[in-house]
Length: 505
Image (cartoon, rainbow, N blue to C red):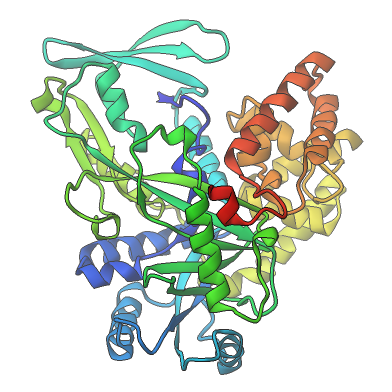
């Protein structure tokens, strides 16, 4: 049984930098084992989910006064590539490097390198596919269900007490094992169940991001460089926008209420302005910002950047709750490997790798084009709509296309700014455990993360989904209100025309 209090993928997963990477930075800390594990996991995700996980080329820009020498960086990149192998079509042309150097702070001579990694633009979709696979394998799913307490008797876990967040109905379930994979909420689950650990398990570290429109000089490849204080940051093309992040700030508050501070937004904005002084980027250009809590392993006395991203499986037998494991730390890239490790801990057979014959993403292009044409014809939709469906739903695209063929209502776009259609939303409710409008528009069909999405778009989408789902006016109004409340709590829009310094006051 899989139990989620809010919605699957709504916590740290949806608030990440959206990369599938080995962690070049980890080499600085000598964590070669973690880098190797991450790079092998990256390759597996590229093979198994090529529609969601894409190769991404990076430019690494180093200032002449950086504490990282060009020689050390070159050696690190060589080792990184040796461990990870090739993922894309080759190196970036020198012209792209020259173009970037011209736009970067021209007062210095930069050292610019290129390397390969990967991106999952919408890890929410990856979680949705894992969830669907779990259901197909026999899992029972309880979405929007709170674990009130883990039931423990005579030093052994017996199950859990659950409460449906919508109906308030409580239910006791029996279990031979409990895996506490709640990320930054892991300590809270133990506390409410009176399971006492000798010390906290999690060091919560807030990571904030800002989202900008594409600006003059913005790199077409991802940029990995240093912020104003020498910390590494990323400037990444994402969702037809530019994603900038991240910060590292200790945070012991409620993870659900995590949001960027004005200082963090200013830090990220100032770093972009310092990198691209001629681009004219200002606070009014920020489309929105968001933050999440990294559930790192409790490490007192260490700075956030020095805490390992390696995961730990905490066995609670010594805490008087045998057959319960808390998953602490880790990262999106290695999530599936962590799950296999948990299965092995429980004595369950791990799932074998999918038989997917993919040589490279370059070789996938003609296959993707043929699949898009098939979906367009099968669903009587445009090629742009078909491509959007394929890129988000992969092998399940044909089922969605067949559904769309049955009704013009289902073929309608969710709003005028997107090619994604109502059939995708209906499928999310039917097959991907979505229960609310926010589940759909923010995570299953995450069109609401687009740069032009507004409250009017939410209303338009709600009206069209209502027609397909048969909601009453009252039901639609309640869904829309909850959707907008969640969206505005997630993506924070700076007040136009107000200097960030003033907002901080």
